[in-house]
Every structure is written in C-alpha cells, then in structure tokens.
Image (cartoon, rainbow, N blue to C red; front, side):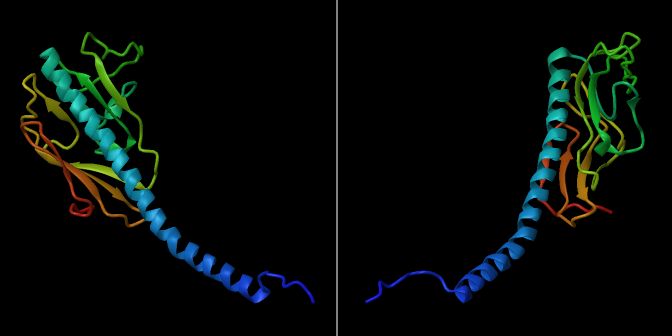
Length: 186
C-alpha cells in the first residue's frame, strides 16, 4: 500500500497564481489613488501649518506677517505658483517681500524675521493655486485677521485625475478644509 501524498496539482497551482495576479492587477490602481490622495493631503497640511504659524507670529509679536510663494534667497514671486514653495515672514514695514541674501534668517534691510520656509511640493504633477484678491500673498495683522484677503487654495493633480484638495481662508484668518473634489482645478 502506498502512502497517500498530499500536494497541489499543476492545474491547481496555475489557477491560484491566476487569481493572485487578477487581484493584484485590480488593487494597484486603488492603492495608487489612495497614495495620491494622501500625498495631496500632506502637501495641503504643510500650507495650512505655514498659514497658522504666520497668524500665530502676528498675534504673539504684534507685527504684521506675510505668507507668499517664494524662497528667502529670491523673495516673493507674483506668478501664483505656490507649488514651487512659500515662505512666511514678519513684515513690520509692510513691504510684502523678504529677501535673505546673507542667510541670517532675517529679511535684509532691517525687515522682520523669517518665520517658516516651505520647499517645493515634491510631485511635479501637482499645482497649488490661490484665488482671491490678492492671490500672491496673505497678510496677517497683529490681531490675527487676514483683512483684505479672502480666498481659496486649490491643490490639483494634473496627472492622475485625483480629486482636488483645498482650503478656504476667511478675512478673520480662519482656515477651513474643503472636502476633496469640491473645488475646480480650472
């Protein structure tokens, strides 16, 4: 009598592998979408954090504070491309610009201190635009108000068709997250 061997047949193994391949192929786009949405939420949270830091700085120091798209070595840009990075700085003389050529973390020519610098968004397929007047900076008064600025920041994915992410900033300085997909990327 031969002992009974338990093993998979070649047919059973091929069917199992086919099922695993089909599930994997179906799951990859779902996982890519989740990753894209998480990446966008993280980038928008960076901007929200910078806006909160600027507002807090204005309130605690009693000095106006500005957030603008740009970099300390070149100053604020007026091109509206927030995805290239932004900076927050004290603006006691209401210049709305900050250049730190000597890299001492202060705006040159006796202006205020740099509060925060955010580098560019890593994903080249993302755009971050502001609507409102003006759309190239936000200024917080010492009271914490963003007087004269009421607008929306929209983060869009131009490659994956992921839903837009956005925040709305009111003139009282309050930031509200918008549900994904509710803002237009046009």
